[in-house]
Amino acid sequence: MSIVSEIEKTIDAAERLNPELNSFLSIEREHALARTAFLESSADGPLRGVAIAVKDNICTKGMRTSCGSHILHNYRAQYDATAVKRLNDAGAIIVGKTNMDEFAMGSSNESSAFGAAKNPWDLTRVPGGSSGGSAVAVASGVVRVALGSETGGSVRQPASLCGIVGLKPTYGRISRYGLVAFASSLDNIGIFGQTSRDVADVLGVIAGRDEHDSTTADVEVPDYSSMLDNDLAGKTIGIPRSLFGDGLDEEVREKVLASIKNFEELGAETVDVELPYAKYGIAVYYIIATAEASSNLARFDGVRYGFRAEEAAELRKMYFKTREEGFGPEVKRRIMLGTYVLSSGYYDAYYAKAQKVRALVKRDYVEAFKKCDAILTPTSPSVAFKIGEKSDDPISMYLSDIYTVSANLAGVPGISVPCGLSAEGLPIGVQLVGNFWSEGTLLNMAHKYENAHPLDARPSVFAG
Ligand code: GLN
Image (cartoon, rainbow, N blue to C red):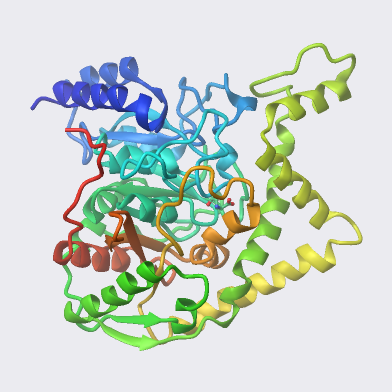
């Protein structure tokens, strides 16, 4: 098929499924077809003609970039994020911007100002979050790959709940230039793929040093795709047994434990490891993430970006009214929490202490990686939950991130790969967390595993 008919097919599928799935906030037919015409006459690139969906908190020049928020509902980015620019330069074609929890705050997509995206395996369930729309766009077969973002698990958790692969790279691997900031010391761009190969191909293109983001590292970008078939013999996987206890759904435990055996059959060795501070991960994360968010979101005041409330008598009232009307309840909760933990009198007790514990969480990983190449846990404690089930209970929602937040606190990479279905036919994911800059090893392990144990089922809503 020619690039143009492939892209038309993709856009048609996106438009056809969107009323049911709500995974796209905008579908960019005109832009995509113009790009196609340009590509037909231009040189080859490694991703030439590949359709890609991009989370709506990643800037795409001239397209809406709403962050799932009313406050940016009419905001059009002035420039492309570095990741987007590199994708375009490699010949990829952005077909749309995807739904997300407002400002990436959430684990279910329900905090989007534009309604939740639906899980294509069961439309009464959440796809996970916050990058739910990107996960759904890939799981429903509309695109093979999509960009998401992670602050505490927002790529790995929805990948797990939607039965696809999701990678959060090492902090500093992919430029954050053009990713709207939530919590800058934790934020990463991540990648969803139908397979690990899809993810590897995209990572190789967008990773690496960027002069626009001083936190990107000058570390060589290996040829990830060529590492996928490496033998797993000689690789060691660490199992933190204490994390398989309370709060973990029985079916998830069973499938994830079974995957350990599968990795052994593929040649990997397993050893027990301890992550004693992991249990503080959620508490530390929700202090640091909210503190940074309260500062990052101060810029949305009705002056420079997006929505401005009308009929305010004076400037201060305009700020207040814009933020009151523009932000949803979860974002307001985070701003208040973050302001509180940073306030004088509470700063040492909360924020400063959380920073100290964060260092200990990181030290756990450094110690564990002296014994193993990757650490295996569930990605999410449960399968996809029902829409509405946790929306009135923020603490239970926050606990969905229990297995993912520590990797963000430490800055190490992690991947989620499907490892089976529940009795009800809902996907379950296994997570591998690796040492700094070991994305190649994680993709290699995930690829070997998915080839030996493919999911062998498709969601009930699927394009094609
Ligand atoms: N679910 C977590 C939160 O609500 C993580 C979000 C994310 O990774 N962006 O903050």
